[in-house]
Image 1 (cartoon, rainbow, N blue to C red):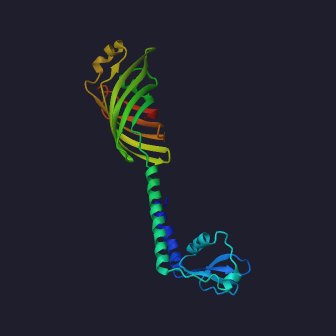
Image 2 (image 1 turned 60 degrees about the vertical axis):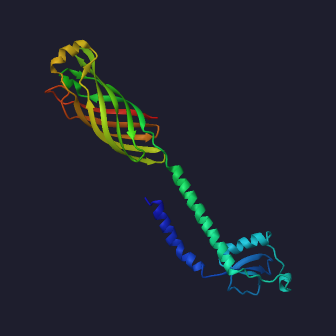
Image 3 (image 1 turned 180 degrees about the vertical axis):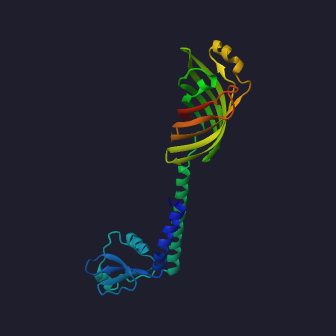
Length: 285
């Protein structure tokens, strides 16, 4: 994609020969005997049907502006011009060039201010605080050695740091895992605290974010004390760690996300590591 700076260089390179060539010419205002209207022609045009009115203009646009101010109706009388009632006027070169330069500088200044204003208006601040609700697919049954895993759920609050495209972040997650054993259903849960870094790409109001980091998780807990007593001897005595990559796609206010949590240490000693795959909807405020 061509950036605005490159586009400006290309346009300037294309217009420079035209500007340079035009500066070597001068223009004059003439009265056409046939149409009785004022026209702008090159100074070297000496057609017998054209009566000079005012000459010495460095740019055709300046000559046309002079016509608008001096002859709003763009009409002229060839007889009066021929009889000398209206003599050809020569603009003072220094004054004309000075006025032209002032107009060009003013236009450049206005264009620069408009460009800066547009750039400033396009630069929007990111919303860095978010809440997310998730569905979890997990292998907690293999971690605990029970019969079956059902879908889990998660809630999280996260805070990003920085207004750049790259960012750091942290937060707090609550994950609940549904299980089934011996015909009975029960649930376990963990609190997770992430530390991560990422990068976001914005196109208009559309936003895509990629990030990755590490979860520091609390010990596994049970909603049902009976299962907690049954599995207490196997439970790990310390926190666990997991690595997570994820992607988010959507608008500034809300985004769909997906990712994985891959176990780096045991949740339950000498059992399989906990792996979780998740999808969620994140809201920014």
